[in-house]
Amino acid sequence: MAIDIYLSQEKIQSRILELAQEINKDYADKSLHIIGILNGAFMFTADLVRHLTMPVTLEFMSASSYGDGTVSTGELKINLDIKSDIRSKHVLIVEDIVDTGLTLTVLKKNLGNRKPASLKLASFLFKPARLEHKVDIDYLAFEIEDHFVIGYGLDYAGRYRELPYVGIYRPEGDA
Ligand code: IMP
Image (spheres, rainbow, N blue to C red):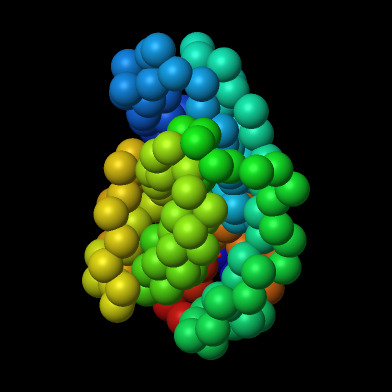
């Protein structure tokens, strides 16, 4: 299996700094409650929060709409919920990728029902070619072409999450 580098570590880190500066400006006089979506967004969440300057609280949540392959099952399952009450808090969801948009559509609705003061979304990647459910992304690091990508938190069958860059996954035999 060959991995073509699609987004280098340097490119990712400098873009995340830009995004964090935008978030710092928008929430300058507020506290922010971050909800990172496991497993894919663990690295993006960790790198993003390092640059934030307002008071931050942080939790993780896990929801999935994918099986072990590269095709969505079309279903969303909440595997791990947050423990805190987000009512009246400024909440920022941090996700790895918006693909069909199903995960975030359902998650935003679920969290919105808990009556936060505001609810915004930061996504590391967005694949517009595959979008089926329109989602507003408030802070986006990169828009990408229609490739199955791995690394920087993103997996194929549980592997490659540890890579510090994003690569294109090409299965064996695919030139
Ligand atoms: P959506 O519900 O179709 O938007 O899918 C979102 C989830 O699918 C993400 O949180 C990822 O876990 C997974 N996913 C979508 N595209 C990719 C990809 O290119 N590489 C790895 N995981 C992906």
